[in-house]
Length: 162
Image 1 (tube, rainbow, N blue to C red):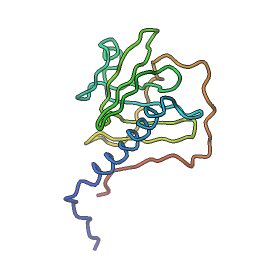
Image 2: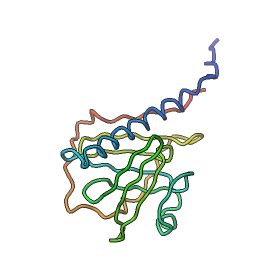
Image 3: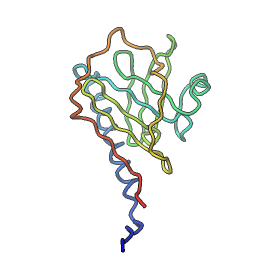
Protein backbone atom coordinates (compact mmCIF):
# COMPACT_ATOMS: atom_id res chain seq x y z
CA UNK A 1 0.00 0.00 0.00
CA UNK A 2 1.63 3.22 -1.19
CA UNK A 3 1.01 6.46 0.63
CA UNK A 4 0.46 9.62 -1.38
CA UNK A 5 2.47 12.73 -0.60
CA UNK A 6 0.13 15.25 1.04
CA UNK A 7 -0.55 18.58 -0.69
CA UNK A 8 1.74 21.27 0.72
CA UNK A 9 0.18 24.29 2.37
CA UNK A 10 3.47 26.15 1.92
CA UNK A 11 4.02 27.51 -1.62
CA UNK A 12 7.55 26.10 -2.01
CA UNK A 13 7.51 26.42 -5.81
CA UNK A 14 6.77 30.14 -5.65
CA UNK A 15 9.33 30.75 -2.90
CA UNK A 16 12.10 29.05 -4.87
CA UNK A 17 11.16 30.84 -8.10
CA UNK A 18 11.28 34.19 -6.30
CA UNK A 19 14.66 33.37 -4.74
CA UNK A 20 16.12 32.42 -8.12
CA UNK A 21 14.77 35.62 -9.69
CA UNK A 22 16.60 37.46 -6.90
CA UNK A 23 19.82 36.00 -8.35
CA UNK A 24 19.06 37.82 -11.60
CA UNK A 25 18.44 41.05 -9.69
CA UNK A 26 21.66 40.74 -7.74
CA UNK A 27 23.75 40.05 -10.85
CA UNK A 28 22.21 43.00 -12.70
CA UNK A 29 22.69 45.22 -9.61
CA UNK A 30 26.40 44.40 -9.59
CA UNK A 31 26.66 45.32 -13.27
CA UNK A 32 24.77 48.55 -12.58
CA UNK A 33 27.14 49.40 -9.70
CA UNK A 34 30.28 48.70 -11.77
CA UNK A 35 28.91 50.42 -14.86
CA UNK A 36 30.06 47.56 -17.11
CA UNK A 37 30.04 43.80 -17.45
CA UNK A 38 33.07 42.02 -15.97
CA UNK A 39 35.33 40.10 -18.37
CA UNK A 40 33.49 38.24 -21.11
CA UNK A 41 30.20 37.97 -19.22
CA UNK A 42 27.03 38.83 -21.11
CA UNK A 43 23.40 37.94 -20.59
CA UNK A 44 20.49 36.66 -22.61
CA UNK A 45 17.28 37.54 -20.79
CA UNK A 46 13.98 36.13 -21.98
CA UNK A 47 10.75 37.60 -20.65
CA UNK A 48 6.99 37.61 -21.23
CA UNK A 49 6.19 40.78 -23.17
CA UNK A 50 2.59 41.09 -21.95
CA UNK A 51 3.32 40.51 -18.28
CA UNK A 52 1.95 43.32 -16.05
CA UNK A 53 4.56 46.04 -15.61
CA UNK A 54 6.53 45.27 -18.78
CA UNK A 55 7.13 48.45 -20.77
CA UNK A 56 8.56 48.03 -24.25
CA UNK A 57 7.96 49.86 -27.54
CA UNK A 58 4.74 48.97 -29.37
CA UNK A 59 6.58 47.64 -32.43
CA UNK A 60 8.37 45.10 -30.23
CA UNK A 61 5.12 43.90 -28.65
CA UNK A 62 3.66 43.51 -32.15
CA UNK A 63 6.71 41.54 -33.24
CA UNK A 64 6.95 39.49 -30.02
CA UNK A 65 3.41 39.19 -28.66
CA UNK A 66 4.28 36.55 -26.05
CA UNK A 67 8.00 36.41 -25.28
CA UNK A 68 11.27 37.97 -26.40
CA UNK A 69 14.98 37.68 -25.64
CA UNK A 70 17.34 40.60 -25.19
CA UNK A 71 21.13 40.64 -24.93
CA UNK A 72 23.00 42.68 -22.35
CA UNK A 73 26.54 42.88 -23.69
CA UNK A 74 28.29 45.71 -25.53
CA UNK A 75 25.42 47.94 -26.64
CA UNK A 76 23.36 48.80 -23.59
CA UNK A 77 23.00 51.88 -21.41
CA UNK A 78 21.16 53.27 -18.38
CA UNK A 79 20.82 49.93 -16.62
CA UNK A 80 18.74 50.59 -13.53
CA UNK A 81 17.80 47.83 -11.10
CA UNK A 82 15.01 48.08 -8.55
CA UNK A 83 13.65 45.62 -6.02
CA UNK A 84 11.11 44.16 -8.45
CA UNK A 85 12.25 45.19 -11.94
CA UNK A 86 15.04 46.47 -14.14
CA UNK A 87 15.19 48.91 -17.02
CA UNK A 88 17.82 49.14 -19.72
CA UNK A 89 18.48 51.02 -22.93
CA UNK A 90 18.99 48.85 -26.02
CA UNK A 91 19.05 49.42 -29.74
CA UNK A 92 16.72 47.54 -32.11
CA UNK A 93 17.50 48.00 -35.79
CA UNK A 94 19.51 51.10 -34.91
CA UNK A 95 16.60 52.65 -32.98
CA UNK A 96 17.34 53.27 -29.27
CA UNK A 97 14.67 52.04 -26.85
CA UNK A 98 14.22 51.78 -23.11
CA UNK A 99 12.72 48.56 -21.76
CA UNK A 100 11.34 48.03 -18.27
CA UNK A 101 10.96 44.41 -17.17
CA UNK A 102 9.66 43.14 -13.81
CA UNK A 103 11.68 40.18 -12.55
CA UNK A 104 8.41 38.23 -12.35
CA UNK A 105 8.20 38.46 -16.18
CA UNK A 106 11.64 36.86 -16.70
CA UNK A 107 11.45 33.27 -17.94
CA UNK A 108 15.13 32.63 -18.64
CA UNK A 109 18.50 34.14 -17.74
CA UNK A 110 21.66 32.87 -19.45
CA UNK A 111 25.31 33.89 -19.19
CA UNK A 112 26.87 31.92 -22.06
CA UNK A 113 30.39 33.09 -21.19
CA UNK A 114 30.35 30.68 -18.23
CA UNK A 115 27.51 28.35 -19.31
CA UNK A 116 25.19 29.53 -16.51
CA UNK A 117 21.46 29.28 -17.00
CA UNK A 118 18.30 29.78 -14.96
CA UNK A 119 14.84 28.92 -16.27
CA UNK A 120 11.66 30.05 -14.60
CA UNK A 121 8.09 28.82 -14.87
CA UNK A 122 4.97 30.89 -14.85
CA UNK A 123 2.43 29.77 -12.28
CA UNK A 124 0.47 26.92 -13.80
CA UNK A 125 3.04 26.34 -16.59
CA UNK A 126 3.81 22.80 -17.61
CA UNK A 127 7.56 23.27 -17.25
CA UNK A 128 8.48 22.68 -20.86
CA UNK A 129 11.07 25.08 -22.28
CA UNK A 130 9.85 26.63 -25.50
CA UNK A 131 12.23 27.39 -28.34
CA UNK A 132 12.37 31.06 -29.26
CA UNK A 133 13.94 33.25 -31.86
CA UNK A 134 17.40 34.70 -31.40
CA UNK A 135 17.70 37.97 -29.53
CA UNK A 136 16.52 40.88 -31.62
CA UNK A 137 18.47 43.77 -30.17
CA UNK A 138 21.56 44.82 -32.10
CA UNK A 139 24.26 42.19 -31.66
CA UNK A 140 27.94 42.87 -30.91
CA UNK A 141 30.60 42.29 -33.53
CA UNK A 142 32.03 39.17 -31.84
CA UNK A 143 30.77 36.90 -29.08
CA UNK A 144 32.87 35.32 -26.33
CA UNK A 145 33.48 31.56 -26.35
CA UNK A 146 31.43 29.88 -23.63
CA UNK A 147 32.96 27.44 -21.19
CA UNK A 148 31.44 24.03 -21.95
CA UNK A 149 31.98 22.16 -18.67
CA UNK A 150 28.32 22.50 -17.57
CA UNK A 151 29.31 23.16 -13.97
CA UNK A 152 27.27 26.35 -13.65
CA UNK A 153 23.93 25.25 -15.10
CA UNK A 154 21.00 25.41 -12.70
CA UNK A 155 17.72 23.90 -13.77
CA UNK A 156 14.84 23.51 -11.36
CA UNK A 157 11.88 21.25 -12.18
CA UNK A 158 8.76 22.01 -10.19
CA UNK A 159 6.53 19.32 -11.59
CA UNK A 160 4.72 17.29 -8.99
CA UNK A 161 4.59 13.53 -9.00
CA UNK A 162 1.17 12.13 -8.34
